[in-house]
Image: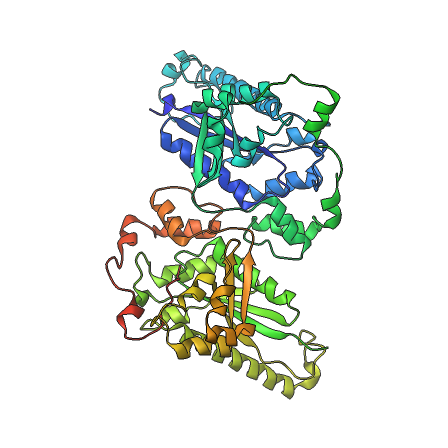
Length: 285
Length: 269
């Protein structure tokens, strides 16, 4: 029964500096996995590049990173780019981005349900596709509560999950809310330590049903760092990133020794926040 | 200034289907040869094996060539050549090398003939620094696994291996973790011609095996971003990889193993 499935939006936060085939693969793997459980229907994928205020070494301007992500997803019918996060003047915690997209999803859902209640003779654009148009009366009487609430889940690799353990990088209450209220879909390489990491954390363990671990059997280690390194050395990155991204990087001459030196010596934004305002000493385990 | 030696790279394999990794091999090999300062890679050739190879799950050459062609649409230097796939029998790699070398030589000689006929019209594209045009070389592009198979007794004809490394040359791509130079050291033949064996390390691991891709397709899983979109569309349109197609040649012996004392190329992935 398709109405019983929980609708899911996959949100990937990151530098995307630049976006690679590996990033895009995460979405495909996550969608296949969630669909195979029979409990979820993935309705959208969102790529949310981090703002320049993140101050990571080698991070080039958000304009370029958003453009490349858009070029990379132009051939996808379900993954899109959202630049809200990158437009903020200050760095935003991942949880805030999750909350923003969750709120957006809920209000879109409410609007859709209100539209459902409208008689079919009224002309108007519906955002969602209706498959059972011949039975509008049933839908009208169905309150939004009957269908389960759509969720936004954080999509990431095992490195992000394991970064939860890096001191001061994440607020403990943020991690808790992420896994409790939203959920994680974590793609990892066969043989990674992710399961052990979850086992060793009381908070993650408590919410392990909301942490979906997906194993990637096809070894795919196309990290942005390696891409930038190859570019500095004049080496080809073709077939590691989408063709349009490859062309864009060449035309714009992005990524050089100079761009890699950006933000050198600066403290990463989340760590800067800690330095200026001490936090509670929450411990992951 | 010494002019660079023009090089053509030839990759033999099943290409069942062509994946992003197959195309990466070419890019890596080209970068490596260019960075030696001695070579100019002028062309890449993908040569899908003939159906007579008899490998399990091998779909018709017509499709494999078509998919390779689609995959290489965006490349301005790599092309697919169907000659090997069109032969009546399976062809040893050394014979495929010889064929393409002769073709390259013929093209080179006719170009030289034209140049000598019209000396004032020689294009700027020709090597500026040299008066004497340089004969192109044809090198076999492969994974390091192929190098390993040279060690297996009776698998290769010694004279074939010698011809491959002496007359043509090998460009061998290996994974970050492995080091194929040991295989060379342990073989007198390979050591003698190690100047003609180029070992390239792939630090960005991208081991997209065609077998895994086919398996994913049979299970209805996504292979987007592992193989080009155009190839995915072609596979869907022609319903190429199915449970039935995977059963093809099941239980049959690979063609080279049926013939006495012929070379085999086990890594036709």
